[in-house]
Image 1 (cartoon, one colour):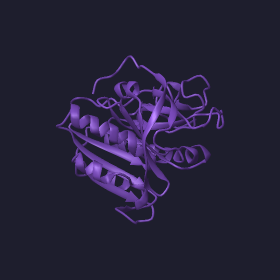
Image 2: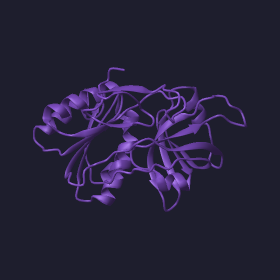
Image 3: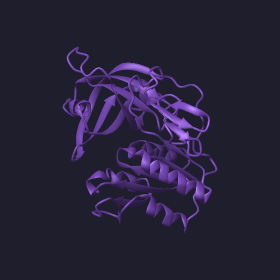
Length: 270
C-alpha cells in the first residue's frame, strides 16, 4: 500500500445512518461523512463529540478507530465499547441524529507491496482498524494471505468474525476464559503459527501489554511490522501533548505522529 504524504482532515456534522448492538456493550456506528470516507486510510481514527443539544458536556471528544470507509456511499463505520460516560452517551444516540466529527486523523498502516503473508494481531476493540486494513488489502493486494490472531476476555469480545471469513482470512481466536479458541494470550497461537508459517509483515492493535508482547515475538522472529497504539486523548490533533509515547527517537504524540508506528520504533517507556 502506498504512503500518503498529504493527510486531509475535516470537521463536519455527520448524520447517523445506523447504530447497532453487536454484543454486550459493543456497538457499530455508521455515519454519513463523505469527505472522511474519501480520505480515510486504514489505521486512522476520528474524534467524535458526544455532547447533545448544544451543550459542551462532556467537553472532550472520543477518539475511535475507523472500521470501514465506503467512498461510493460516503459511509464511515466505527465499532466502540461502552466503557464510560462518553461511550454510554454515544450508545444512546439514534439514527437520524448528527454528531460533530473530526477526521481522519493520524498516520495509517503501510504494508509493503511485496508482502505475501501478513499476520494481523487484534486485542478487543483493536480489531476494527485491522479489518479496515484487511478489506483494503483484499482490494489493492488481492494475492496477500491474511491471518487474524484475535484475542478477548471471552467469546463475546470477538466481533464480526463472519466478515473476516468473507475476506478469506485464517482466524486464530484466543480468549482469557477459554470460551472460544485458545485459552490464554493471543500471542501463544501467533508464536505457534510463526513456527510453521513464514510471515512477511505483522500489524497489531490492542492494549499495551499485548503490543509489547507482539513486538517481542516479531523481533525475535525477524518479522517487520507496525503497531497501532491506544491512548487517552484530549485534543486529538497534537496540541495538548496528552498522548505522548516513548520511541527510539524520543517522545512522540500518538494522535498525529501515530497512532501507527514501526514495531521497532516504540519503546513503551512513557
